Length: 374
Length: 152
Image (tube, rainbow over all chains, first blue to last red; front, side, top):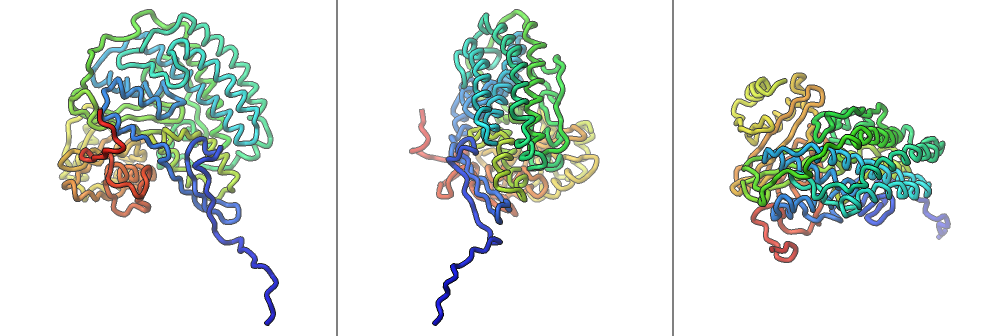
C-alpha cells in the first residue's frame, strides 16, 4: 500500500477561535474576548466579563448614601470625581438641597480635570497599543500634574471620594488655583506634542482611518455614548442635554464627528481635552467665596420613590437609578455604566475587520473594566 | 411631545396601561403581554421615535419583580419610563426587547444573571458576570450566601 507522504493541509477557510485575555495588555484590565476568525478576519466576537465583578450594587443596599460614594470611586477609577458626582446630585435632588455656588464651581472644575487626566492616560495607552511606547510615558508624565493638584486638595490621587452629599469633604487647598492654571499653561504646549507624535503619524492614521466604523443609528441602538458615540455623530453629551453643576453657565462646544471610525474616536478625545481646558479657564478665577458644604442632616433618608440621575463621565453617560423605601440605605441601586453599553457594540464594530484592527478598535473605545463589571 | 400629549398617546396605544405618579419621568406600568408590541410601536412611529434605551434594570418588589425601561427620543427629546411586573416570584418570564433596541441584549443578560428574570426569545441568555455554575441570583432580596456576603 502506498503511503500518503503529503502532510495534511490545514483548510484556511475553516473558522477558528482566538482567546484574548483575561490577562492581556491590550484589554486594559481583566476582560476576555473570544474572537472567531476566518483567516485574519474577525467573524464574531464574544466578550466575557465578570472577572472583577464585586457586586457593588448589592453592597450599596447595605450602605448609607454617604458610604455609597466610596464604592462609586471603584467603578470607573479614572473618572472617580464624576462617579462621586452622580450619587451626590441624586441625593441632593431627592432631598431638595441647595448646594452652594462655590461647591458647584469646584465640582465642575474637578470633573473637567478628571476628564483631562482620564483622556491623557487613554492617549498613552492607545499610543502603546499602536506600538508607540513613548506615548504612555508622555501621558503618564502630564497626568501626574493633575494628580498632584488633586492630592493637595483631596488628600488622594486616584480614589478621591471628595464629594459628599451637599458639598465637599474639605475646601480646596490655597495652591489649587495656581496649580491648575500652571497645568493648563503647560498642557497647552504639550498637547501640541501629542499631535506631533501620534495624530499626524502616517502609520497610526493608516491603521485607524476607515477602521471599525459605527454609524449614528447603530450608536444610538447600542446606547454607545461619550466620545465614542459622539464620533458617530450621536449628540449625547449630558453636560449639554441635562446640564448640572455650572455647565449651563460656561461656553463650550460639543465635539461631534461624522465618520464614526477609530481615527474619529481618537480625535474626539484630543479635541475634548482642549474643550475641557477652556471650561476650566472660564471658571478657575471666578470661584465664588462661601461654604464648601451645605448644612446636611447627620443621617440622610431619601423619601420613598424612584430617582434617576445622569452625568457625563469621561467614557459616556453614567446613570444611577435608585429605588428608596424611605430608609437610610437604598432599596435598590443600579448603575448604568457607559462602558457596559459601549462593550455591547464591540462585536458589531469588529466584524469584517482584521484581528490586528481589533486592538486599535478596542483601544479607541477606552474600556475601564471595573466599570463594566461593577 | 410634551408629557400630557405623550400620556394620552401611550394610553391610546395600550388602554390597560396603568399610569403611575412620578416626579421625574412619565411612568406607565405595562401589562406583561403588551410590552413587546408597545416597544415596537414606540420605536417605529414617527411622532414617538423612542430610539435610545438608556437604562434597563430589574427591581425585587418582594411579591413580584419589576423590569424598568428608561427610554428617550434623541430627535424629539422626550423621555419615558416603563415598568413591567411579573405575576409572582416563580413566573419570571418577560418578552425580550433586544430585537428593538440592541443595547437591551447585555442589560437583559445582566438582569437575568443578578435578578433571575428570564427573557423570552433572547438570542443568548447566559449569565454575564457570574460563573455558569453559580447558584441563585444575588440581587434578589431572599438571596442568602453565608460565604461570600459578610453581614455586619
